Length: 142
Image (cartoon, rainbow, N blue to C red; front, side, top):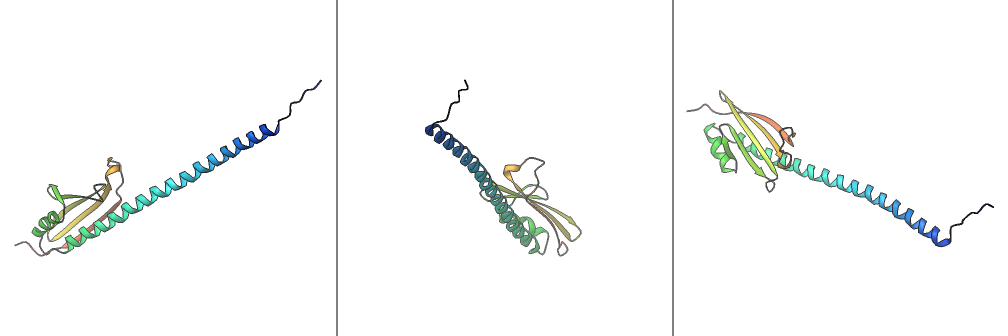
């Protein structure tokens, strides 16, 4: 004799509820993943915007000087520290980001290499958020 057991209405309802919970859990995980990625993209874009603004500020400072002796005073007056000769650093964005400005002089031409880094990605292999190199001619030294 072949005995077949049928699912009762209560068991079918329980199975349907479990499948609905699994489906909505998977849907929620996918949605949270999308929102998490959007948050990361927004945070990166804000960092790049800040880097661009800070770099433009540094460029305007460098281009505003007439003589190379003025650069150090103006940069340190605008929040840059000078840990070693020709190199300036500044933290911005509540300390989350760091700008490095390296100056070199060849005759009357000053070259400034500016790079903005995320302090959370301070590994040696981390790519800068923004990099730019500018040249500015100054009057001859006295």
